[in-house]
Image 1 (cartoon, rainbow, N blue to C red):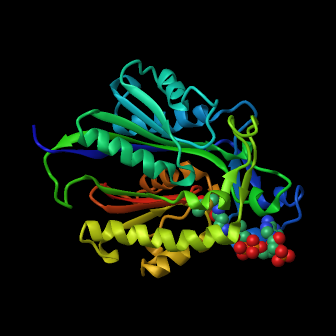
Image 2: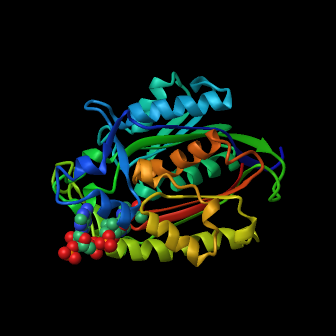
Image 3: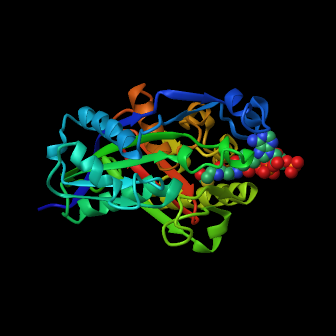
Length: 325
Ligand code: ACO
């Protein structure tokens, strides 16, 4: 058997129906549409309906990705789901998705790296495919951050939204040079010293409650620009690529100014960066696959293109992936 690599066979995204505008948030906390747009680029976000769970969003995104790949749940042998807002403390939300998709074989589990979760999940699935442990994998980022926000804290509640994105990976043999389709490389980092910059003040082994998101916004901002630029440079260097070789960058959608700062540092042109923050806000682990799904659906990202994915989140955790679509 030749060398194995993971090829993206389909992508899909799902956003809950309800849209919450900045104007609506301004009726709840002391803020304004102008402030939110100017400081973050966000105009609106989607909010899950009461009773709508992370797994419900994930299943809808997964069904779309599977349809794009011409596959069914029964064809899969792996689900890796990234979330920081699981349905329950256990079992893994991935197993709920597995059951809903009619997949009774293989393995399904969650990965937790907050906003960097999708890059982590992609790396895990890619390595399992390369190692021969799976032939086809569903990689999902799904979140209901609206459930862990403190809706009285204007410094955080304006920034996030709910959603899900998914991709299907299939094992292919051969290749190995940068012109073949597939995941070329993934790069993961974390540094737990920054725990209290961005965390949830609850959990089963601390307070026994779900808790709320807490963040030192300015510090997170500063680290995000530096760390993301470094991991993107690492991904480019590992593949002997320059920014000019990249067709599209699909960044984590945390703040328009973080995306601009990172792209300035790397001299990436703004017209090759997929931006959804204005409509989706920060959907944490869902943001990269949602943005990818949008750009694939509208034809901006096409087979053969070189695409760079990057994200950063609480921990801190951060990472990047270079993919030939
Ligand atoms: N509306 C109006 N005023 C606000 C709001 C708001 N929603 N939020 C904060 N302010 C006020 C503050 O109270 C402060 O007022 P003060 O000067 O009277 O004390 C003032 O605005 C400036 O506050 P800063 O926090 O310094 O504002 P900054 O320009 O840093 O923007 C923001 C804040 C948007 C949170 C920014 O720091 C940021 O985006 N940080 C990154 C955080 C992030 O993206 N986290 C997501 C998770 S991590 C990740 O995904 C990478």
